[in-house]
Image 1 (cartoon, rainbow, N blue to C red):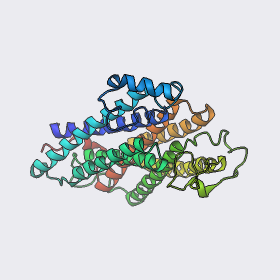
Image 2: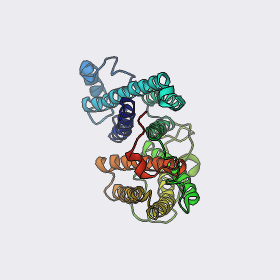
Image 3: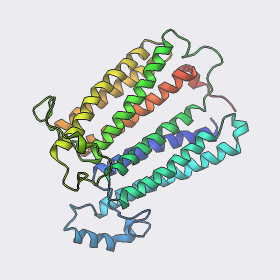
Image 4: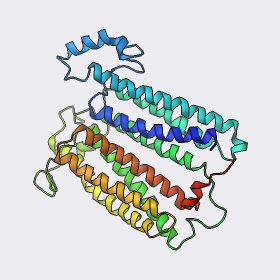
Amino acid sequence: MSAYRKLILLCACLTFAVVVVGAYVRLSDAGLGCPDWPGCYGTLTPANAERAIRQAVEDQGGTHGPVSMPKAWKEMGHRYLAGVLGVLLLATCVIAWVRRKRLGQSPWLATAIVLVVAVQATLGKWTVTMLLKPAIVTAHLIGGMTTLALVVWLALRQWRPPERGGAGTYAGAQRQRRLAVAALIALSVQIVLGGWVSTNYAALACPDLPLCRGAVVPPMDFRNAFHVVRELGMAPDGGLLSAEALTAIHWTHRLFALAVVALLGALAHALLRTQELRLLGGALAAALATQFLLGIANVAFSLPLALAAAHNGGAALLLVLLVVINYLSFHGLAQRSLAHPPTA
């Protein structure tokens, strides 16, 4: 395997890690551990900002607030990891342009990834400087997932499909392609809904199962729930966001999850019936079942941090699997071709 392919695979793994660590930082309420950007109180590390952090902890009345030394290290650890990823993706883009003839592929996808990362870095800054405004934090989550999907797609491009035959020629391939696209779209919508739940702290708005506040359709306020331009915990008119609005956010995510399970389950079933992509079908079914159970467990056990972070990781894993499935479905790649990368 060439150094370029190894670099892209490293970027794919690191992007997944950045997404999961970012979720952990958000869920552990460490997003404002360092309330400036890109440093921590104007310094490179929280260790250098110890005096400022100690004063902030005192001003907020203790370590229960948004600032503490552990939270500062969590926030900065995520930034360090994201910074390394940004440098590696920039290197990938430069190599893609310099070696474009030898690689035999357009460098524009690698360029698009760098542009997305630049936007993502800006959103990361605004997440902190705008005090965790839900629209900005959700957009930051979307940017992370978009980066992950694009880097995985770039990694898959490094393996050349066979000249004839493969996963695109068996009976039912067209139906599988349509299912794969629909599943990817549905999962993307669900990830956005999940991000909106998380950024509005609505994960426990429906504390019971399978009902929500004792009803199939509880009292809900959709008008304020999905109003994008507002402050954290606030309605557009400046008042506190109501329990009915939080319930609407949670209930929508929970209801749409059923549609996602049905659609991804149908895709997994279709893949299990094909020789070429049977293993991916099994992986999709297993990941889907695990993610569904994690969602239930988060409500049943009142959102423990480990389960909440794992639920975010499960969403990222499902996204990776669906990107791979779509790539293979549309490019005629049989699984056996992955074991034989081109030598260019």
